[in-house]
Image (cartoon, rainbow, N blue to C red):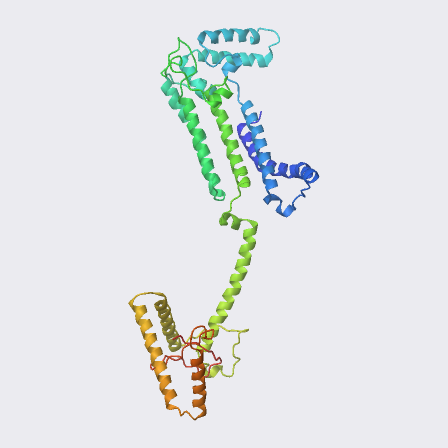
Length: 455
């Protein structure tokens, strides 16, 4: 017989390998030929096969079918209880148990011919169980914790059996919880992890409910700390309806099988039927790797171009030293980093950049500073127009410049009026700034760079 650990390993291997293999074979020999023959739908290319709806639905069908088969196998593999071997109901009384055992002894007593070695071992095991279950306290514990209660010693009350049984069963839940933690740690973040924990909590609550529920047995000779089922019957669950001849510990074993199979099915089917659109999941895939490689290449080129532009600006701002006049001047194709920076030049550049940032912020913001800036711009433009008008008046009308200016003025006056202005509108004349602007010494520099000034 296969041990529990070996069965668990085989089940895990089956869930990991069989669904993918079965899906590929089913698509190749059944689904694709049917769709192409009757609906003229060609099969997808192997490169995009796993991302198609056809593959996802077939995969879900295979996994759910294997799940149903595994559940049936797990339910049938549970060892029969004493009541099933006696072929009696779980609520049979003491007299019914004695009558059932007498009938069993007539068929499997070792003195009867044809019983054999196996029949003799079965009879001895059933008789030991019958002798123990005549005690109502032991029967109470047997219904909830199985044949292992026959090995427990120094226990005499239902409370002691309950305490010992709950501690005994807690080992399974501790190992299961640690397994879920390990699974979540090594796996990718997924919403399925939340539902695995919810499933685990549901199984735990169901197991505790089965253990603490009233006993289904009906007997006037047995005494129990729980209410009499004749007065307060035990609640009927779905498991009691599906398996009416089974007791609580068998239902708990079935719940353990159900939890394992549903957990693996949830981890395999849900991501396949509902693929995640999260960018994190995309980046972890093959497409994400290609995207990141392309992004790294673009970032490298951008970094190189930015470095060239920066050092070009620095070279243009710094004058060439006498020692470098005879050397090869750097070009854009062979740009050398600017290692030795001049303090005066860097200070002037820093001051200029600070002024540009302040000017840009003043333009965007509102308030008294913005209004003062606009008033200053208006006054500067008004002063510039006044200066230009004074220069025009000082020129003689008979000169060539005066004729040109007069013609321009007449032309400008002719364009005044609605729907007569040229497009785009002519820019205002530049401001005449009386304060000297900070300059950078560009003598002996290998670069000539134009710069626009905002007014």
